Length: 213
Image (tube, rainbow, N blue to C red; front, side, top):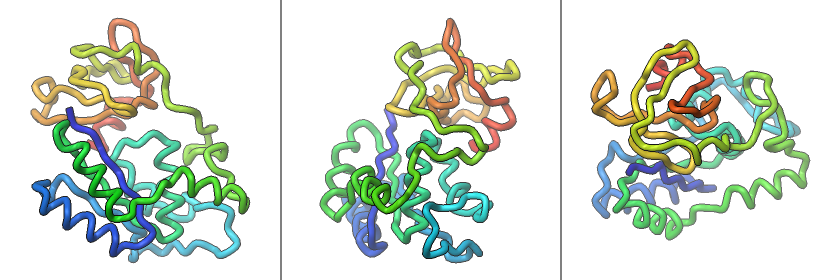
């Protein structure tokens, strides 16, 4: 089982130090991603802005986090933190590496971002109750995860079979690589699930799903 482990840092230097320690602990460089606000982006957060404005930052922070398949709530929170100057460190850890990754991230000062968000709310940040980038009201993680089982077929809204379930994380489905069109694991966020019967049915069409693989 592979799981995405995240650490959020106020200082990029702390995130970089954690990255170097992960490498020293045996993690491969391609397992690790360091994300900070794109210095080449034209987006400048206004000092009196209540929240990060994804519409003014097209192709910026929000797009940068797309390939992690985070649920909208988490992606929204990370985008806010990045727009405030923070740095996000992510590790695609195998099952035997998960605890090590978490320990290293905490050792180098990973902050409790949900707790930090509470202080933002006190200053007027609208938080998760705001509208999502597509204009729809953000909603909690999909509850159908408990109905999803290994080897179930995953079907897009236009009827395309994109693979079968290998395993299930807290917020994403990992597709079996032997049923993948390119022979590698892909991940589908649980909040893309529309319903589950004998198969897992997604809300998104195949081109949209595969565009972020």
